[in-house]
Length: 297
Image (cartoon, rainbow, N blue to C red; front, side):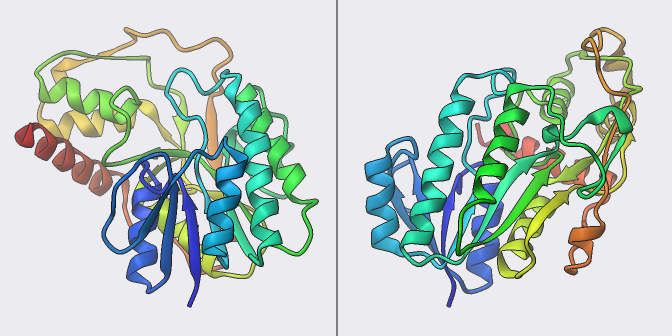
């Protein structure tokens, strides 16, 4: 049986990963700042930035597999947060401890922000790694450090633009849905920029696929098809019947905004993974989740 340690296992992506692993029969452990219990797994309270506590947990669990998702992710903050540097050090320490206590396979969440975005489509083997943000730079630095760790199988998962239930309400999809559900205008840029959106449940399935595989290296976790932001916002408005509330052009596009960011997915598709949610189905499911949250409040 695989004994899996997850960091970030209560988060936007991690909660889906946790459930998938439990369903597959793995023994699942979480290292989390949150206290309490979760069905089907064991929670070990602790801060990843506390190296002594991290070693205590790794020594106790002695995981065979590690899924490392935790990082600074606060919207509007993480791109330039100085905390990114601390997470590089903490993440490298975690993986080294994992190997010292007998762990053999690790999957780490990287980012499409590691790429040079000027080419539009990002390919793991041919697109230059030239991150423009501190967040992307630190993710790339961690990947380089972990490739030097011996006696471990490393899969590096570069996540693209995720959406779905439980995402932060200030992110694009959540903010538009909440505005329209409340009968309020939703300010948008012109929306001509194209982005590769992927439902978080599909991203989780990709991460679990990587954890259970033996292939190593970098893998894009994306839909493989970039869509105009205007199309995504438009589908939400159509599903909610409130297209008149979308204010296209009310927000200026950030300076230097790339026209297109898309992930080539041939490498992970070769492992048997493919997205289950098309855009319309995924957005409809996400809208239903937000409606349930409002009714429960």
